Image (cartoon, helix red, strand yellow):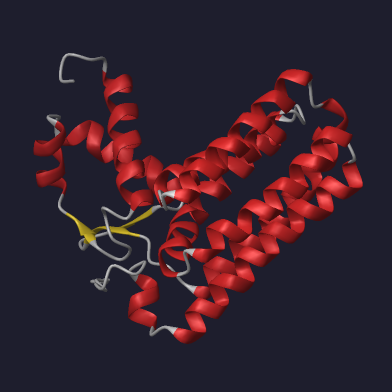
Amino acid sequence: MTDLPQRTMTEQVMARLRDMILSGELAPGSRLDQNDLARRFGVSLVPLREALARLQSSGLVRIVPHRGVFVESLSVEELLDIYQVREALEDLASRLAAPRLSAADLATLDRLKIEMEQTAKIDDFDAFLDLHRDFHFTIYRAAGRRHLLQLLTQLWDLSARYRRFQLYAFPERMHTSLFEIQAILEACHRRDPDALALLVRYKVHQTVVSLLDIIQREPTPTVASMANGKHVDER
């Protein structure tokens, strides 16, 4: 990695850090040891700091002067903020995408739905989440709106930790989600913008309802640590 151009190195470091944050390997609220991370990635501090600055702009970390860099914590306020905006934008993207879905898009959606069913049978949460994201973005890309897709990508990145927490705390939600996916798939095959937008919006809303229910039943530290039993917030 150290022989790569600086820009490429920064992008690779950013991708690895993003994956570690979204998977929960780097816990919400935890302080990042930059020297340790640089050693682990085999890079200098320069590309690491550039990567962290870019992750701060996307809302995944917070750089506190004279204190360090922290993974952003989870909160009810952020949850509602992210998902309310997602509801509106995914409604719009679905309406735009419905009449533009190609035969190839529909074939991809059919395949992804089958693969989600297979991962649900073995409770492979991480694979399910990856397939779930691919399913929705196959639809949203068909809208043909670059800036809308960029906004949705950022919002899905920010909400990934909440979605992962939901499945680990409430695994039956994965199976309920498949019924919603089936309805969405049928609306896609009909290329029905109103039905597709309504179903997508309902699915996002139900995720919020489920998460809020979990939060009401669990102590705040458990929520903040995505069910890993640890709560670290040194800010």
